[in-house]
Image (cartoon, rainbow, N blue to C red; front, side):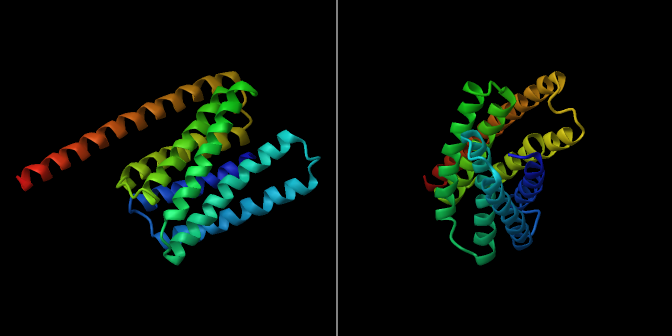
Length: 209
């Protein structure tokens, strides 16, 4: 996926995180989702037309569709006030595909940063499945995960690429640490969330008694 596409995706995920946290108007964010989603549907179609149909080129182009379709689906769901069940199932499908990209990054490309990034994206899409299909009350946690990922997996890597330093060994080492620390933060926040749910359930049981 091109870094321009990642840059635009960073903006969308950032706004979506604020929407989940209740800090941004849903309809306005939905419009931006549709705008960027449309771009990320048109671009890969063009790339497919001009490509030599090499399997790895198709592999890279297909990843853009994953983001474009997600953004369009989110935008239309929000603007039309649709029930998010189907959106959640779609996000589960994308989450599974992202696991394949994670494994490929390790086995074929031997790229730890790419593998960690795809793994984090898979987790984010899975959270959308939990929220929209299984109706788990995790919007605040989802918002925090999306906020962090909008910067560490999308916006900042794109800016570093534009500055010509992204592929340097030192940056790769630093960013591996940044991504691992982010994953630890997600895990700690999830553990805290589970403790909160447990206390709430215990309080409800006491009230019933």
